[in-house]
Image 1 (cartoon, rainbow, N blue to C red):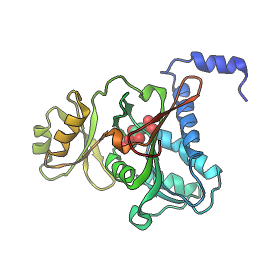
Image 2 (cartoon, rainbow, N blue to C red; image 1 turned 45 degrees about the horizontal axis):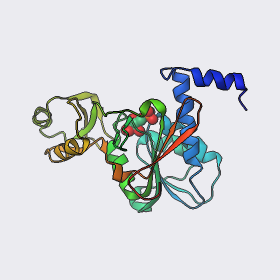
Image 3 (cartoon, rainbow, N blue to C red; image 1 turned 90 degrees about the vertical axis):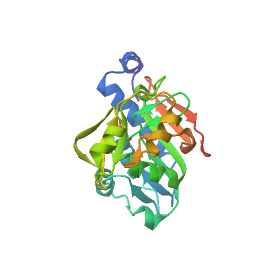
Length: 237
Ligand code: 5RP
C-alpha cells in the first residue's frame, strides 16, 4: 500500500505529469475490470487506457469470457494475455464494452478516435448492453474541442474533405477497414448538431462524436486515484 507521503505526492502531482496520467488510466481500467463476470461477452476498446484494462481482466482469470477487439493492436495484446478473441459476428450482442475517450464533457458527450479506431469502437459500443468509458482526469473537459476524428471512404476523399472544411487527413493513416482517417478541425459547438452534419455528409463512414445515450457508465480516476462514477444515458450506469 502507498505510504501517506507517497499519496500526498500523488495528490500534488500536476495533471501534465505522464506518470500521474498513466496511474489514473490504470486505476480507471482496474475499476472497470471488476465489472466483468464469468461467461461475459466483452468488447475491448483501443488505446493506452485499454492497454491497462487487458492485463487487469486477464489477472482475474474469469471463466468462459468471450472478447471482441476493436483494433488489431488490442487483438494482439489480448491474445498475448490469453484472452479468448472472437469476431463481433460470432459473438453477437455483448454484455459490456469498455473503452477510453479523448474528451468527455459534463453532459456525457465523448470525442473518440485518437487512435483511428472509432468506427469499430462505435459499432462495439452500440452492440453492448452496457458501454463503460474509462479515463484519466485530464479527459474531462468543460467543452468539446477539435479535432473530431473522421473515417472517410477513399473514393472522392478530396471532395469530401472540402465539404467538411476545415478538415485535414492524418498522414497516411488508414483504419483497420481501409478507410482514410482525418480530423474535423472546426468548432464543435452543439455536439448533436455537428454529429448530424457529419453523419449526413456523403463519404463519411463514421465520426468520433459519441452521444451520451451510447454510454452507461463513465469511470474517471482523479489525482488521488479515487475513481469517480458518472452514469450515462444508456441503462446499466
Ligand atoms: C482510439 C480511441 C481511444 O479510446 C482514445 O483515443 C483514448 O486513447 P488513450 O486511452 O490512449 O488516451 O478512441 O480510437
